[in-house]
Image 1 (cartoon, rainbow, N blue to C red):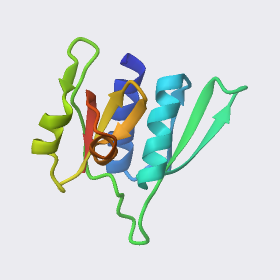
Image 2 (image 1 turned 90 degrees about the vertical axis):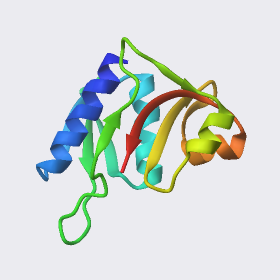
Image 3 (image 1 turned 90 degrees about the horizontal axis):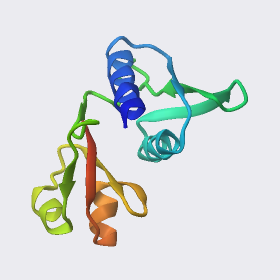
Image 4 (image 1 turned 60 degrees about the horizontal axis):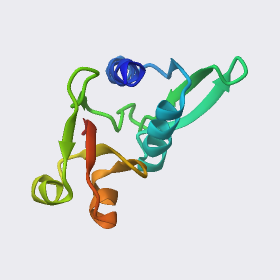
Length: 127
């Protein structure tokens, strides 16, 4: 969880500074997290470096140089994990941004959690 919180911070700062890419160590949780970000259109691509030990994450920008990531707010930290049930997620899910939730089936967006009727640990909120 520490590596994931570090990556979220790197992406948040890099998108504000209009950087083209960031680097991160590779592990299973980070790979799942990045796949969801690619599918949701927040980052453009990921390339493995050093035999898959390091990831180069390319950030996505609109033609005017605006990032689709305005803000990433880390909700669960290595010391505090926030669980949200399906019913609570259905009540609080807004169209203001995207929740990323770690479930027993992998990392899902809030909308996918509602579709599959499952809850999990809140990772972050993207807007």
